[in-house]
Amino acid sequence: TLALQKANAVIDNVPFEESLVAQYIRIRSLDNFGRYLEAVTNGLNLLRLLKIDIPCEPSPAAVMSAMEETGRAASAHSFSQMTSARRIIDAKKRDVMKCANALVISFFRSASPYLPLVACALVNYSLQNGICHESESATAFVIFGYFN
Image 1 (cartoon, rainbow, N blue to C red):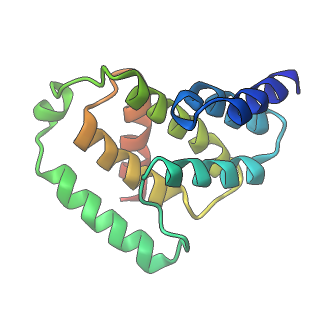
Image 2 (image 1 turned 90 degrees about the horizontal axis):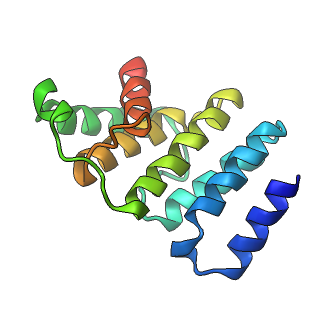
């Protein structure tokens, strides 16, 4: 709980743009304590504050629409284009991907219907902003492929 308390203190006292590492710690802490639904709620709010488009209602129609749009966007790139794509160098964009990647665990553990929507949003984010060559972008592509 100490990590969660310190993360919350940072989040409450610094500008939002500077709180992404603390947001990551909060998400991971909530997940570690089994507070998955709270992590999901915090995570969805975080993604929306970051202007990552996540529908308010995870209806089957919204999921199918997101899957189709993401499939079209991804299919515009070959495998070699994606693997040789520019890397995310910007620290903020990398932190965004790190936070979103941490959320995937809580979405999975809580059986959240938002999981495929978040995967689509992260694939699109990666295609638009560069591929994070650590695990963050890979996780999004794997989950998208699983649901596809």
